[in-house]
Structure formats: C-alpha cells, structure tokens
Length: 445
Image (cartoon, rainbow, N blue to C red; front, side, top):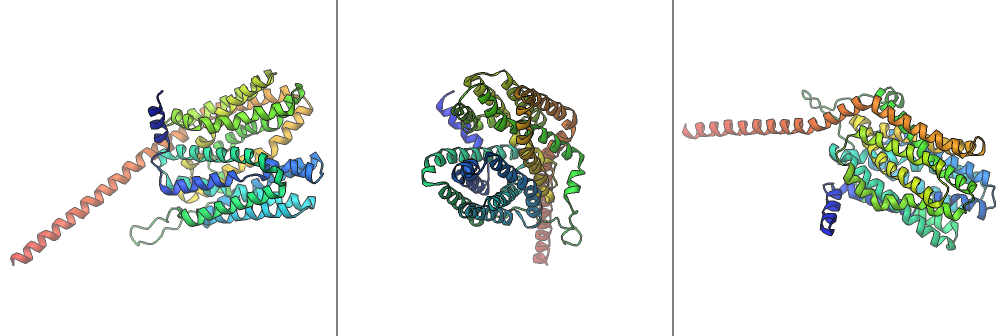
C-alpha cells in the first residue's frame, strides 16, 4: 500500500464529523493524558505510605465500586441536566478528588476519596457517549466511538510514559497534574462543546412540547433486547478484565520477572494506538452482531491460549489476539447501545451499560485472584475461553433480530426525513405559486 493510499485511508477514517465531536475528542485526549492516579495509586499506597498490598487492592476495588454507582447516576443527570453540564460537573468533581489525594494521608480518607473519584470518573461516560450519538449521524456512530476510544488509549499511553518519567517529582505532584488536566478537560467542554440533548418533540396541533415518557433504571432493564446486550457485555467484560490481574500472576508462576509482564502488557496499548484506525477501516459498515460475535471469540481465544503460553513472546501473542477483540468490541457495543436507546433516554441506557463495565471491574479482579490462588491459572484461562464462547453464541442467537431492526430503522430514518423535507419544500413552492397568482389577479384588476 502506497503512502498516498494510506493518507487517503486515514483521511476517510477521520472525515465527516462535526466540530463539536472533535472538541469532545480533544477533551478525552487531554483528560487521559493526565490520568496518573489509577496508574500509580497502588505504588503510592504501598511505597510512599507504607500500606499493605491487601489494602491497596481494596482501595482500587473501591474505585470500581464507585463506578457501579456513578454510571447510572451520570446517565440520569445526562438526560435531566443535559450532556454538557453533566460532563463539566463530573470532570470538576474528579479533579477535586485528585487534589484531595495529594493532600490527605489518612488511609481511610484516601479510600473514601478514591471511591468518590470512581463515581465521578464513571459518571461522566454516559454523557460523553450520549453526546456522540446526538452529534454524529447514526450510520457513523460506531466509527466515532472508535476514534474516541483511540484518543482515550493514546492519552493513557502518554500518561503511562510521562508518569514514569515524572515520578521523580513525587506522587503528589502527579496527582496535582492529573487534577489540572481534568480541570482543563472541563474547561474545553464548557467553552467549546454545545449542548446536544435532543429537543422535546412538539405536538403538531398545539405546537407545545410533548411530555416524554418517564424512564428509570428499572424501565431500561425491562427492555429485553437491551438487557440481553448488557448481560452479554458483562460476560465479555469479565473476560477482558481477568488478564489485568491473572496475567502477571501467571507469568510470575512461570518464573518470569515483573519487567517481562510490563513489556507484555504494554503490547495492549501499542496495538491500540498503532492499529485502531486500521481496524476501523476494516470493520466499517459491518454488521454489529457479526462484529460483537467475532470480538467475543477473539477474547475467548486470546485469553484461553494464555494457558498454553510459557515465554514472553507467547504471552505477548495472546495479548495481541484479545486486544484486537477489544478494539472491535468497545466501539461496536457503544454504538449498539445508542441504536437501542430512545433519544430522550440515551444517558440512562449508556449509564446502565457503563454499570456492566464497572461491575466487571469490581468482580473480575477478586475472582481472578481467588482462582489463581486456588484451582490454578489454567482454570482461570479455560473459564475465560468458555465465557467468551458463550457470549459469542449469545450475540448470534439472541440479538441478531433486535440489532438488525435497529439498523434498518437507522437506514430508513434519513430517507423519511428527506421525504418530509421534500414535501415541505413542495408545499412552500405551491404556496408561493398561489400567492404569485393572487398578486397577478390584483395587479390585473
């Protein structure tokens, strides 16, 4: 492939989005570039404060537990307040928590702050995902989510490298930099991102706003196709989260050094940053059910093959396989959520979906550690293979019709809108012709 063709391909991948999307993309990049807290939190707690590894693990788990509460809260605020105020509020709350981490030294005070930070960091995601669905044409939503996910991982890679270099300045300095980056992210959203929440529908007769159907978390969970999507995503998330705990333990059990794990897990970020745009090009316009099925199988194969690995190269190969699954799954799942959600409830639907990620982030590390210490790492990886395969089967058998119907609705909606616009244009033209005819009559008289 020539340089020109690569340039054209890259241009096609990033073209066609409104300016608001790119400001949101930039805010994501800025936010993740300063995301030092979670990366270095366990080291700060154990090395700087002298706390136990058990307590450090508990604090990290509390961050995930905060996300379980924050995601539906953020979804509710997204639909009630709007996308923009929810983003600004949650970003400023996360920035405040980062400042507090640099100031407090009490172990339980730190645990509380990290819990609140989990609420804020997870609470902002429904508003971001809803805003993307609001701004971007339905047939381009998956590509938009993929680009935003690319920004997230690019920023995280920069943060990991920059944080490792800047750690000589002290952990508290890193937390303050994190706070500054998050506050800058809130400023970008406040100054440059317009509110995108869809306006209420108007009654054709009275011209007044039609009362929207009230949607609660229970209402969302009664939506059978979406409930299935959330359940299957939870299974995939459990498989996706397991390597972050199980892989270092497995590699250590094979006699490999911790530095080997650092090099192997770095492959995840390198592959995403280097190849996300290419994956977007390959998967563009593909069936969401097909993509979700394939990504689940890649998760199953990649994690399952970890049981057979014994060298850093072999472990890195398994990471590459499930990382490709990650690049396909995350934007496709977000787009499928947007497809199934009513316009006025996009925030709540994204909030419930985000809760599945948060639950997995809390449960999977505990289960993975227990299985490795008990039955052994091979049982963990075989279980991941089985769960991933079950998820793939579920996507094929339980969601094919629902997502196909949603896709057809997206394809026909623009046509219907064009038809309405054309009819309005014809009516306006007819009105002008009548008026012109009346003017001629008056002139003749």
